Image (cartoon, rainbow, N blue to C red; front, side, top):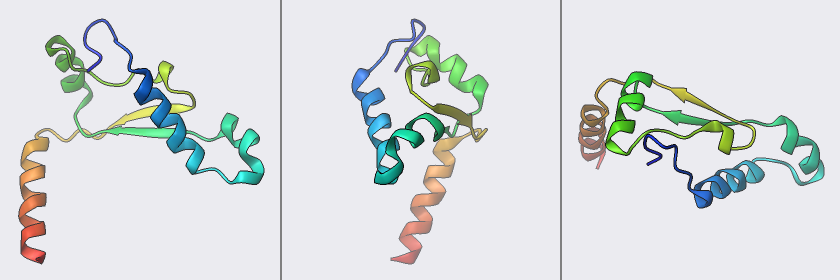
Length: 93
């Protein structure tokens, strides 16, 4: 919920950093902190994410997340995808 003013949530930034640490081996922790990258996937198209800032939404600013990048997956209607996923789960029960 960064919105037009790119609000930050320090707890989210810390959580992403902690996730990155779990993916690293203990013997090369200091070396990997500088070389490994965290990928943040956003299912929406980039333009939808940009437009969402007007509604106090938005997306992560990777400048606030060390060694990270954001990839937009260009799924136009994530709500329909979610419905299909739920129906698929119901079929397997």
